[in-house]
Amino acid sequence: MKLPQILSSRRTGIIAALLLTLAAAGIALVSGDALRYPDEIDYNAIAVNLVHHGEFATELGVPTALRPPGYPFILSGIYLVSEHPVLAKLLNALALGITALLLGKLAQAGGRSDGNGVAARWAPVLMLGYPLFLYTAGTLYPQTIGTVLLAGIVTLIVTRPGKVGIGAWAGFIFGILILTVPSFLLFAALLPLLCAWVDWRAGHRWYARAPLMLLVSVSLVIPWTVRNHRQFHAVIPVSANGGLNLLLGNSPNTTATSGVNVDISEYTKQTEGMNELEKDNFLKKCAVDYIKAHPGDALWLYARKVAGYFHFRNKLFTQAESSILKDLVMAVSYYPLLLLALGRLAWWRRYPLTATEIVLCVLYFGNAFLSAVFFTRIRFRIPFDALLIVLAALEIELIILRIKELRHPTTRELKA
Image 1 (cartoon, rainbow, N blue to C red):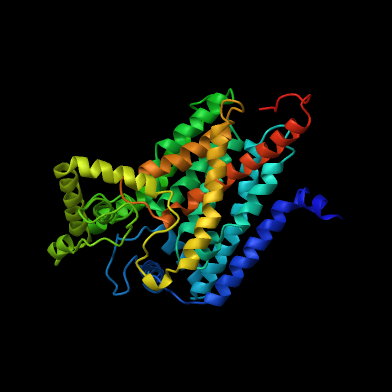
Image 2: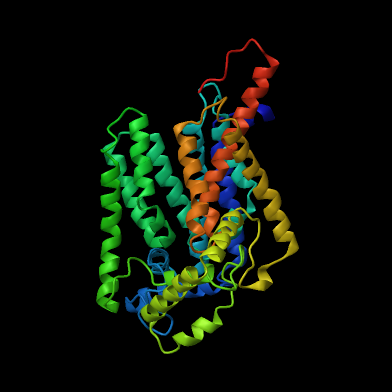
């Protein structure tokens, strides 16, 4: 079979998914059980405590609500078999391959009727050209699992409109996603609303799936909230680090891309002797007080953080992991995708956006405004970058169709 025929076959997505999985698995095996970042060490310690003592606790055995429960519980399930972080990294590799297949389905749903599935084949291929996915999959970060969960929810929402049972599955996955990446609590209303809108646009009952999706997701989160209340005698929906994150994103020393590298020592010194909840509440109050005292500066900072969401680099807490080469690779791999997505938006009048494209745009670009309430960080953006890849693939399909149209002026207008 000739190369063009291979590239145009339905097997392209599967081949890309296998390549991604194998590449990520190779990186996982090379990195082994090494843990390079503080977050990795915390997640690993909690998982080990769950396995050996049945407690959601720190390395010192102190019960905690500082970290969300989803990923440590996933790790503990792996550690019941073998207590090696490399196995969790191999799970990330598998999740990455599944994500590639889901992106192909999303692109197929958002593609044009005369596109012959071009976008569906490009989406998994574009994942191969985005090395940040591979790098993150080689760590004990929850972002890779979060990516496949988000891709799964969006795929269920846009590809099966009106199917009530699908709403329950989407809610189940959404609940797990919130427990794994708590920042998705900000989407607790938005995702069900998008689900209702997709149903309405497709001519189905808009109220059929969305309430069920919300109900199921909330029912998964409530038991953990009850655990936190019993343990700490306070309402903590998922984790107790919102105050810290809010202050990191709203303080005199915060910049548009500073991330966690902000000097808040003048505040943290005052938290000595406080427990997790007291510290979280105190830091949250400090952030709110700063915003109230400097509304103009806070608003300008917020605007810069929204812009910083689209930056190709962040200052890393572990400076040894930074390099000019990594920054260059990130810029070269990210900005073409962003430009393709923006190009698709520029054509919205001539070629109206499909329902799938609208959902992807709302989630990806809307996340910039939600994230900026706290602070923007490339690692937190990773699940949404998968959605950006689908938008880029859909623009590539449109470009190819537009070229064909220009070559054959008599050809009818591109179909929506």
